[in-house]
Length: 327
Image (cartoon, one colour):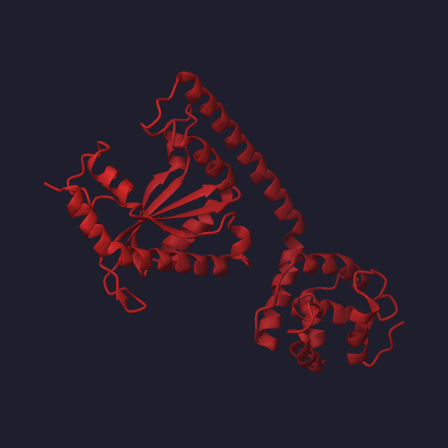
């Protein structure tokens, strides 16, 4: 028979493995996200960190909460857990892809809960929503000299910001036996969840409309960013200023394509050197939109100052590089 002491001793011996395993999973998934999106820190709405289960919570779950585990210690899959919080339900699949594709050489994965499937099975119910995965280490994983035991589990939760707020408010009371729920409490929670689901639908619709409106600008930035990598040798820093500069300066160039700008840049390779020299000290030169600024100054010098987004001090060196006088 498993006792509290048995679990406590095993947990103390295993904590270092679970701690290393949790850190490694966070790092691997965030790296997978960085391949799919520009800035993972902006995509994720809360900081991501792993958490180890508290000793008392582990013992209670193993022995006293009616789980009826065959192996009370081994069957608990959330001894280490990680939570990813995104803005809308449409973004959950991006995190899922990082789990199932970018981490598959390190772990086996199983989707333990999917609120989309639950919603389809019981469309008339509005309850706690989340996507849960359990990942288990494959053989031969070593992290900083720490050999990770094969099959060691970690639970990963993926939620929207609204789902997370709902969970923080209700999950410790309504869905756990520590507090007796009432019909009024359950009804209010169901109404809140229905409103959250409707709000998420509207958020997704707004996001789709915004994405459609900025699609051409994003594509323009993507092409210039790749040229920045190819010529400067590092990734550019993409910010909102890129979009503002493109909106302001692209009309001055008769809506020329990014490819045409690159063709022009290839005839003036000295520009790459100037950007590389200044990028560490001047933020403007770390942006992919800097290529557009050079193009507009070089081809339309008399009107390049008209948008007013850049000061004479910022534009002066670009005019000088191109052998032109600032108007």
